[in-house]
Amino acid sequence: MNLEEYVEKYCLIPAISGHEDLMIKSLHDDLKKFVDEISVDNLGNVIGLIKGKSDSAPKVMIFAHTDQIGMFVKAITDEGFLKIVRLGGVPERILAGATIQIKTKSNKAISGVIGTISHHLTPDDKKYVVPKIEEMYVDIGASNKAEALALGIEVGSPAFYEPKFTKLANNRIAATSVDDRAGCAVLVKVAERLSTSKPEANVYIVGSVQEEFNLRGALVAAQQIKPDAAISLDLAVATDTPDMKGVNELALDKGPIIGLYTFHGRGTLNGLIPHPKMVKIVEDSATKLKMNLQRHASVGMLTDGSYVQFVEDGVPCVDLAWPTRYTHTGIETCSLNDLRGLENLAFNIVKNFPINFSGSRI
Image (cartoon, rainbow, N blue to C red; front, side, top):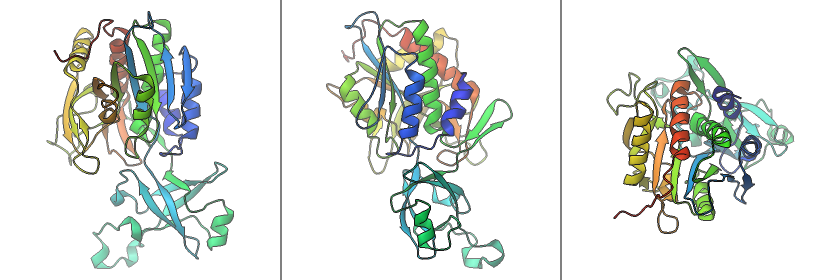
């Protein structure tokens, strides 16, 4: 399969945090063809190893998360409507009128619509107001609570944007869960290339879980691997649309991205300032490839690398990314050209990772 086919395959697999089973199996089955060893830990992290020249060679962990944002059913009304709660950064302003799916215990997907006041009867004081999720409800077509329960829906059932994958002009795509299924697709392609072009370092390919639920999975994987260095693959927010102009300099079709500073600024109060030696490795690799490398420093976002850096004596980390528009909606948009560039950059970094690497700052 080519990169686009992997991206489409993964974007159409529903797998919110804590319910990544379908994505875990798919990634495991795809990776096992290219790695020397593969396992899935108790939390659900998929961990593949491509052995280097020796056991003492550096251990490099390159990872992307398998989960996506979503919702959970928190109540079912007597009339058969569902009340929901958000998982991760779901923007309330795009939910009204959205089509979603709810997964039953038997993995059946039940379609639903998030209700909104009919336009013809919307009072003036509601026309420009975003309803809070507590005020929203999901219409699955049920006439009462018993019918909803009979469909297999119950309190705690996971819900997600209706999976979609659309090809746009200029080799661009719009899809659900580009965050971070595109990163997972890049991982598989990197593993495929490494399987026929062996690295000197020991390369661990990891699909982590529960990133959207406070970045939990990658930390557990790193505690097992104890890597000498780690590379996160996740999106960065493109600002080349009229409403985002000037926020930063990231744009589609200008190549992969290195993160120089991320800080969430709320909640976790975490982020990543990359290790200077990892920054040099990335920049040197991009220079050798004659590749344009975009740079970003952002407040309001963070990646799994924020916690991986805390393992053992500290893990030198760096974020690699591709630019994406409309993040955390059901129509995240990116360029396949940038993803191919990221694949090439990531492959060359891990393939040629310094055999004498040390994270020492002196």
